[in-house]
Length: 409
Image 1 (cartoon, rainbow, N blue to C red):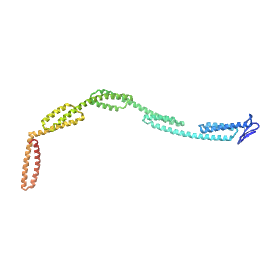
Image 2: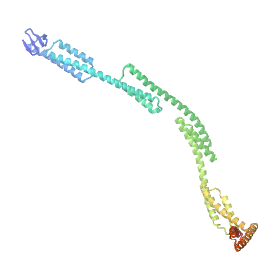
Image 3: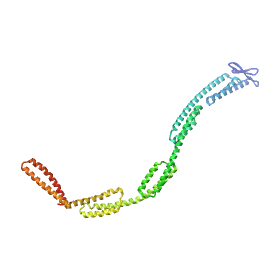
Image 4: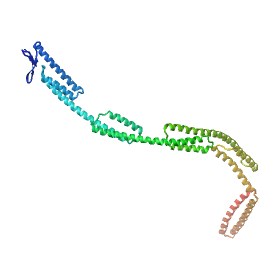
C-alpha cells in the first residue's frame, strides 16, 4: 500500500483522497505501482489548479460575462465534487467560492457602471435635444445646419437608453431638426422668389442703362444713372449668376457713357483753362487803367477789354468768382469816377449847391449879429442860446461848402 498527505492506494489498487468528510474513492489503478497511481491523480489535481487559476485571471482581467464565469465555475466545482483527483479539494472549493464572490462583485460593478453610463448617456442626449430645439429657431442657416449635423453624429456615438426614454428623446430631437429644415426651406424659397423679382427689376434697369449709354445730354443722363444705381441697390440681389451677368452689363453701359463724358469734359476743361489764361491777361490789362486819370480814354479802353473778355468764353467754375471779381472791381472804379465827374460838372446841381451855401452863409451872418447884440445888451442867456443855434448852422455851412468844392468851385 502507498500513501501521501492527500491520498492513498490500497492493496487492491483502489485510490482514495482525504477530505474533511473522510476518505473518498477516486478510482482504481491496475496499470502500475501505487506511487504511479498517486502521481497520476495528483497531476489531474494540478490540472484543476491550473484551470481555476486561469479562470481567476479571466474574471480579474477580462470582460468575461458573469453568466459565462458562473458556467465555468459550476463546471470546475462538479469536477472537484466528483473527486477524481488527489489533492487539497477543500482549498479548491474555497477558491471557487471566492470566485463566485468576485464574479458577483464584478456583476454589481458592471451594473453600477452600466447605470452610470446610461445616466450619462441620458443626460448627454437631453443636452443634445435641448440644443437642437434651441437651434430650431435659429436663422443662422449655415452654422445652425452644420451644428445639427454634428449633433446627429454625436447622438449616434452615444449608447442606447431604455426603449421608451430613447424613443421619446429621439422624437424631440428629430422634430427639432425637421422644424429647422422646414423653416430653412421656406426661407430659401422666399429668398428665391425675391431674387427672381430682383432679377426682373434689374433686367429693366440694365435695358435703360444700355439705352442711355450713347446719350450726350450729359447732366440729365448722369443724374438718371445715379437714380438707376439707387434703384439697383433697392431691388435686392438676384441669383448669383444672373446678378454677376446683369451687373457686368449695367456697369459696362455706365462706363461707356461716363468715359465719353469724361473725354468731352477733358477737352472742355482744357479749353476753359486756356480761356482762364486769356482772361487773366485781360484783367491785368484792365487793372492798369487804375487809378483813373483820363476818364474818357479809360472808359474806351475798358470797353475794348470787355468786348474781348465776352468773346473768350467760360473759365473753370472754381476760378470764375475770383477772375470776375477782379474785372468787376475795375468796372466799379470807372463807374464811381464817372459819377463823381457827373456830380462835379452838373450845372443844376452846382447851382443848387451854391444857392444852399449862400442861404446858410446869410443865416450864419445874421445869427452872429444877433449874438453880438445880445452880448452888448448884457443878455447872456439869449446870447448863449443864439450861439448854440449858430454852431449848428456853421456845421451845415461846412458840409455845403465841401459839396460845392466837388463841383470845382
